[in-house]
Length: 198
Image 1 (cartoon, rainbow, N blue to C red):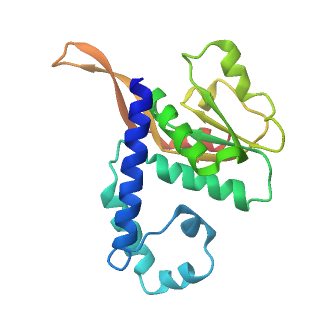
Image 2 (cartoon, rainbow, N blue to C red; image 1 turned 45 degrees about the vertical axis):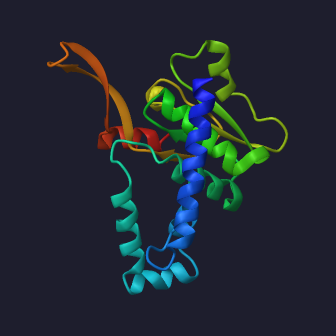
């Protein structure tokens, strides 16, 4: 019940932000991930006069450094699924279980029936983890949303694309609490290379 109410709240917040973005389009141009990746059309010309760079910097000021922007992840995955020539799976790295749940919900909302989302986390039972290795049903694209469990310990054979949040959860000692806690932090360059090779 709490998870469902959380999803409804996040969906309402996303809709409110979209409406605000539509109203303020002149002041803060919205650049979708597809426009940033496509590198074609009007956006290429925007690079010449600095508007693209300004818009990217404006976006960067609106996001938290240690949080995953699930809307951006969903837009990237949507772009890869709809415009790529390769038909392999998409592997998305996020730091924790709650990020997996949020990213899967955002991707399913964006792509609907065109994708088959699979969560991959070390706490899942083996049967559910094996779904990441199975082919997707019908003509759907498989999207595996995983933590760093997919970074070193396993290889998913049909992955063609990797979307990396650049974040991971690590165990750290909190001297004020006197206990170990999970903290979200940026991954190392070596981890980024390892994820890229998946």
